[in-house]
Structure formats: structure tokens, C-alpha cells
Length: 431
Image 1 (cartoon, rainbow, N blue to C red):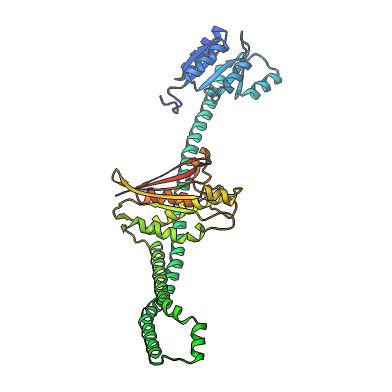
Image 2 (image 1 turned 180 degrees about the horizontal axis):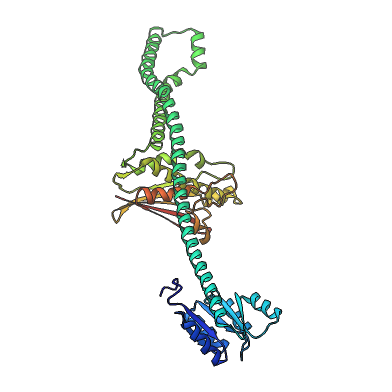
């Protein structure tokens, strides 16, 4: 039924305890192509208004039972009928009564005895106003929906820009540091490897001197004891090996830094997720170490046998970074108010589990921190939502993570948490 057409399917509810008034009004109204509903008391008028939703109600003030004022008041507090325009019919000419009716919610007054032409003119006016109001409300709703969609698109674009700029800046910084490390590190590493056989030759030459001069002077003997010559000769080779191992370790760190800061191309590429997780843990290692408030945060890696995944590696590394950084924040917060010994007994832990299930790669990152309430859990992926103090969080990290996993990789990201018992993030990526 389309009630927006003012000449068709317009229903007007007439409420009057005088049958003759109802008849006269009904004939006049039907002569203009409108349809009428009729009621002789307030109670039945309210029932019909709820059931039929008329376009307009013409309501007599003086009626048995509840009068027109009370009927109108009930109509206006009822969500079903509150928007239906009400026109009072009354023989009263007292201004106070008219004001009372308008204050209750009536839109107009018709004074008895009424003139049909005046009644029709007023009905036409208020039907037109009602039609324009509905049309305006519809346009406002449509415009609001358009603006809401535009806002969501803008927020989506902003997140992409923030994500791109953030990863670009971090990637350039990390890649630059790794590059600057490589040259001196390569020199030290190669020099140590060359130094080991040279030092071996020098030691061998020194031993030849000892054999050729079996009776060294007192000065030489005292100096050898002073510098612990035998111990130094024995330990020197081990020291060189240790320095080579340290260089290898730094080279691995440099490689991990480059892995973490990989610049994504316009298309997906095969990537070892374990390398991405390991490089992220390395970046955050300084935050995992023990401090004055707590012992070291333990990280357990329960890696399954994962295939290479087609993805944007830099973006996934950012997801791992956001979740792991939040886990560390939660563990730091849970450490407040606890003694060092208590934390040692019940250590702070992060567990990272990976496996394949249902043609998906699953990554579970769990902590035993403070957890979160149901209300917080429902909003953690919302843009700009954060529970952290000022200058400690932007509310963008998990919103960006959700966008990366769902929009960029057709995956899923979920969160399970219990207040006081920890938090678990489950990431699923299609193989």
C-alpha cells in the first residue's frame, strides 16, 4: 500500500460519539477519494489507530469514557501511533482548551458546527504536510546512510594510508640500520676468520722460540707468569671462535631485520610465516627482557609444519607486531602490584602456536596477562578504540590488523579473552 500518493489509499480515522457527525464527515471525505475508518470512543480509536495506522485522525474532544484530550495523550506516547497527525473537533471556543490540545500533540482544531469546505481544506493541508514530512525523513535517512558509507570508506582509506606510511617508515628505518650494520660486520667477520690461522702461526712461532731457548731469562719467566701465557695461548682460539659466533648471531639479526621490513609488492608472494614471527620477536626482544618490575617474559614457540603462504609479508609482520606488542603491554600491566618472587613462581608467558587445519594456516598468539571484559572484547577491533592511557595507544593497531587479515588476505581474526586469565588471538589464512 503506497500512502505517498495524496489522491489514493489515504485513510482517515474519524472519532466522534455522534453518528450523524461521523456520517456527514465520512461522506465529505469519501467524495475526495479518501477512505474512512470510524470510532465512537477513545478506546476503540486507539485500537484502530494501532491496527490500521491511518494517515490522519480527526478526534472529537467531548466523548464518553476517556475524552479527546486523554485519547490524544495516549496516542502520542505510543510508539506505534505517535507520528499520526491529530486534528481536534470541538464545540469549545475557549483558547485554553485549544492550547491544551496543541500542547498534548494535536496539529490543528476544527470548531463545531464545522463547514465541509473548511474541513476538507484543513485535511488536505495536513495530509500534504504529513506527506512532505515522511518524504523528508526518508531523504534524511537515505542521505545519512550515504554519509555513513562515505565515512566508513574514508576511515578505511585512512587506515590504509596510516598502515602504508607506518610500515614504509619502519621498513626504511630497519632496512637502513641493517644495511649500515652489514659493512662493518662483514669486515669484522672476515677479519676474524683470517686472524685465527695467523694467530695460530704466531703461537706456533712462539713455541719454536721456547724450544730453541730452553733456559729463558728471569725477566721472560716473570712476564709469562704475569700475563698467564699458557692460559692465554689455550684460550685465544676459543675467544676467536666466540667472536665469530657473535658475528654470525648479529648477521642473523640483520637478516631478521630485513625480513621484518620487507617492502610488499603489488602482488602476493610466497612467505615463511615462521620467519616473520621470529623477526618480530627479535624486534621486540628488548621489551621481553627482565626489568626492575618483573622477570623476563617467556616466549614459547609451538610451530607446526607450515607451507609457504601467498601473502603480503610486510603487512602480516605488522599484524604480528601489533598483537605481540599488546600482549607485552597486558603482561606488564598484570605485573603491577605483584612481587618479583610471585611473578617468578607464576611467570609471564606468551605462547605462539601454528598448525594447518581445514585448508587454512592457523596462528594462535596467547598470553596469560590481565585479559579483558566482554564489553572491551566486543570493541577491540573498532577504529580508534583503546584502553591504554594517553600517549600509550592510538586505537589503530588492531583495526589495521583486522583490515590486513580480512580485506587483504581473505582470512579471519578472532579474539578470545577472560578477564584476569589472559587473551588469545586466532588468525586463519587460506592456503
